Length: 305
Image (tube, rainbow, N blue to C red; front, side, top):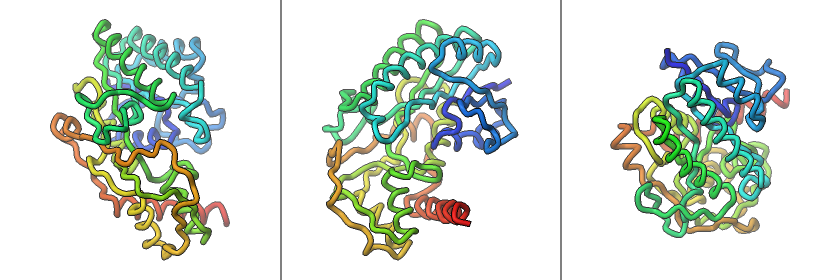
């Protein structure tokens, strides 16, 4: 039986992996810290657990005895995610989870990694060439965790990979993130205050990110694998596309917001994703933006009725 534990299953990316895993007939055991499950889909197995509590994690792994683990849970407060010391706690929690998973019959683990692990001064990020020299606490912790897990997995005979996720947009994204902020502002006919917008970034629709992660999970590919489009686009182009679709170009104000981590270009080398996993995205930028706009239209309508 293909039994999988999914952490971060109610998060932005994690929730999109569930229907894909269902189609592949996995026995899904999703982890949530929510006490109220009324808004959660009822056709999978939900487990209430705080991943920062070792005893709860140990009991969880003993009970489920999964052979697959998709670990997407992490501290994700948008206001301080990049600098918070909570990142260190999540390294500790993730290592404990990996040990308990392996000790209870676990065979294959995929971690949700991050492009922030790379040295962004290089612009073009290749798993085998670009140095991992993170600028943030978040990136440093993700990078350190990956290095430890690689060595631990080899010692334990555990199959392990990390999907280094680049820039993501789509339904359920946090409201302050760029694409969602622009869409919501224009739908409500409010001015969107932005940075200069000349930075070039590698964006991928969240449904494609989830599909790539599940594809990685079901493979035997190990090590770091970039999850991106392989194409860098100016942030202005992305936001202007939103403006065109919502007839709101005049509401876009470039310049007032100071940009952090302002590297000119950050894009993924997707050779491993494309060649070793035989994977390619289903959505181009225009289709993904259209899907996201339509979702937010329905979401805003539902909350204002």
